[in-house]
Amino acid sequence: MQPEAKARLLRRSIREQAPFWLEVTGESMGRTIHAGSHVLLDEAPHPRIGEIWAWCSDDDDATVVVHRALGRGRDGYRFQGDGRLERDPPVTPDRIIGRVRQVRYGDHLWRVGWRDRVFRTARLLLVTAARDLARRALPAPVKRALRPFRRLPD
Image (cartoon, rainbow, N blue to C red):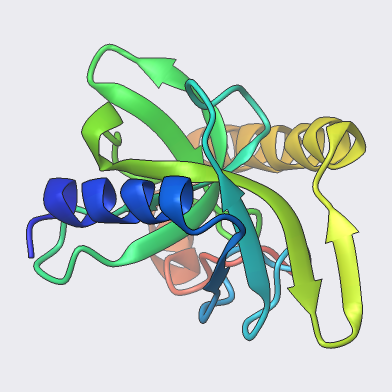
């Protein structure tokens, strides 16, 4: 299925089947959203910096990705997982599904609000800036050696 078509179907499901919970399987959001969590999605006009959104990747499976918004560029929205060092490729508006409002993990349920948006985004931007600075300062052999370690430490 094409990512745009899958995103369109999921957006319709959010509108028609409120509340709409989606299971998260990966670890790319670090300690913010654990594998096995469920996220509550809702409609919103567009991603704002720091909000967590679900969107369809551009691969053959149109995998649903849940990552934090970092802004918008000329070619689409920018996202990055809290537990990753690399930004995601740009995401076009037609591949965006919805905004994460709550997270449920086991017996715990919490709302994703302004504190998460401010503090986690600041941490993510600081780590990303430090990574970029280190890349410019490190010699090429060290950079190659560090490539396998693309996750943030816990």
